[in-house]
Image (cartoon, rainbow, N blue to C red):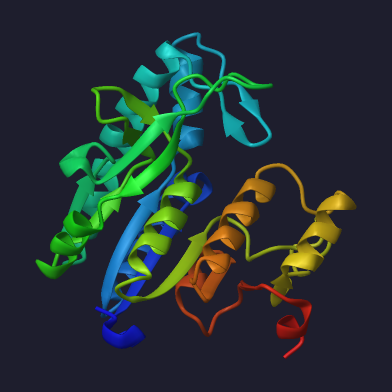
Length: 271
């Protein structure tokens, strides 16, 4: 709780991406590190690469626009099976093996995350959900019970329709919603070590990146593709009170390891 604006509990919200999920060794490593975090924690996972392979086996062509998936009705059926079934339960089982009391969830379970279907615009994304609310009462009750919620990238509209929702967005919205009650640390774990100043050099990890530098790197094409929506949503979390945000590999769960930290201003970046 934050009585009088003072936070008394820490909370880690961690998101792991498809490149880690596809690598058995990396997944085991990141889940062991996640399970070892002593305070309350929430895990959000993707699984797009696994979904793509299943879609291709079913002769359904995966379609992406600006790093976001087009989700028609057949695609929605597949991602529900892959995200909420195969990937989520595998992660939950691995966490249980570490002694972490993990509870696998979609946004529909206990009405945890409600969304609205994205309206048709320049791009018709199909059954993609934009988050309306995170049910903080339910999520807090789960955390208070000593359980660790593990969310797959699916939400619902409250009227029986499941919706595909970007995992980064889910992690950000959970972090923003729970920032009112905890000191939240938001970490994105993927295959890379962080945001690169030179896409051709894996060692060129930026220790910090401010929003002005981000826009400059994006305009020059240095930051592109899926990293753009990731950083857009991450900076949204920062503007809404989440002060510690890191992007990196499995080691990013530890604040001492190499990762890119986000900051709002260039002045803060240089401190």
